[in-house]
Each structure stands twice: as structure tokens, then as C-alpha cells.
Amino acid sequence: WRQRYEGNAPLWKRLFNKERVLKEFIEAVPFIDAIERLVLNTELNDGEKFRIIDLACGRGYLSMFLSELLPSNKVERCILVDKQWPMHNAPPKQHHINWSHIYGSFKDSSIPYNYYESWPIKLNTSKVNLKNSKEVTNMEERLFTNRGPIILVAVHLCGTLSLKAVELFNRNPETKFFCLKPCCLPTMVHEVCMAGKWKKGTWIGPPRTTTKKYFERWADHLYLGIDNKDATKIKKTIMVQRHGGYQNEFLLAERLPETNSVWNELQCQPVQEEE
Image 1 (tube, rainbow, N blue to C red):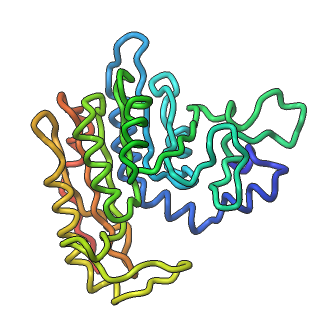
Image 2 (cartoon, rainbow, N blue to C red; image 1 turned 180 degrees about the horizontal axis):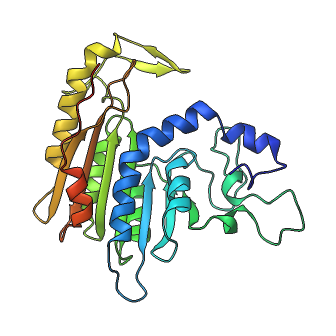
């Protein structure tokens, strides 16, 4: 990435905060490993490729990792879905996520292509508010219908957005693989909830450790909501957060037939580490 954005110091400073990128990577590793096993060990029909849909993606770090790691001959593109993107072909405003790291141009004018063309697997943005049913329906028609095997990833989904992700998997049989890592709990109008919120990077509310049991119950409910009539599913606790956090629940599902190399690894019991 440093080489790609060489000479564009403002973009690099905005995009690459070492601690943030490292945190994003660590928390995504279980999904990256499962997706890589799936893609490498799936025999696709002629002309068929996977399509990755990355819900509530933020800047799109997970899709950026996957673009670099997965074989481009088996993945068509990654679609980065977030309500904070600008409208198509409109310049980003202050309240938008700036997409110049995806669609911008190299500072070296002798390079005959832009950042978009430099990604091994193409990254496309899609502005969708997942809480707006009309926008979600439109997204399903555009991105899910008759699109071949889809990998649906949803990392750090706050509150009821996790429910929206589960519903998308259940409704769309083209979705071959589903990865969900829920983030914070729903608001106080829901049965499983928490009276607190983040404000400018600071947690305002009860000690986060006291809400651990509620979060685990929330993850259990989400897991039960994943339709497994034609799918294999699993909920795993993987300790990616140890200090000040409790969001260590990973939910995965694959529509049958299952990929043995994926599930042989997922169903292994983790080695217990000493505290």
C-alpha cells in the first residue's frame, strides 16, 4: 500500500494509522482464513467467479486485504457497502468517507492507470443505508440476483445492523458463504440491549466488562437466526480482544455442499492459552 500511494502524503496519512489497520487485520484474520480456504478449494463453473459483498465496510480495509490475498481468477470483485460513501460520480463532501484511495490517481502522471485499476481484485463502492428497506431491496436486485456465488462479510456491525446481515443471508440463496462479527449491542428499545454508546472515541456508559454476558446472548440470538435448512453454521469465540473489549464472537455459515477444508479448520477446538 505504501508503494501504491507513494507521493500522496495526505491520502496515506488519512488512510494508514498503524494501530487502526493492525486492529482491523487482527479482528478480520479468522474470516480471511476461512474465505481463502473457501475460494482456493472451490471448483467453479466455466466463467463463474465469486463476488464479495462487504457490509458497513467503512474505508474498506477488509476488502483491501482480500483483494491482495485472494486469486483474481476466482474472484470477480469486492463491493464495499456503506451509507457514508458519496453518491456515484459525485465528489466526496466533508461528512462522506473519502474514496480517493480507491478511485484516485497516481501522483506520478507517467503511470497510465489509476488506483482503481491497480487493485488485483477490483474494489467498487456502493452507497446503501442498511436500515432503509427500499435501499436494501434495490441493493439485492443489483448485487445479489443472478450474480453467482456470493461471499457476504459483515464485520463490526453495530446494533440491529447485524440482524440485517442475517436477513440478507437468509433471503438470498446466491450467498454461498456468510461471515458476521457483531459489534455493539442494540439500543434500549430491544430486549438485549445496553445503556451506553461511543462518543468521539470514548465509551459513555457502564463498564464494558459488565455487558459481556449480554453481548454473548445477543450473538447467540443472531446465530439462532441464521437459517440452516440448507447450510452449515458455527459460532466461535476467538480471543482477538483481551483488554477493554468483549466482541470475540464470530459467526460463519456456508450453503451446502460445505467446503471440507473450511469446516475442518473451523470445527477444531482452539488451544486454551494460559492467562
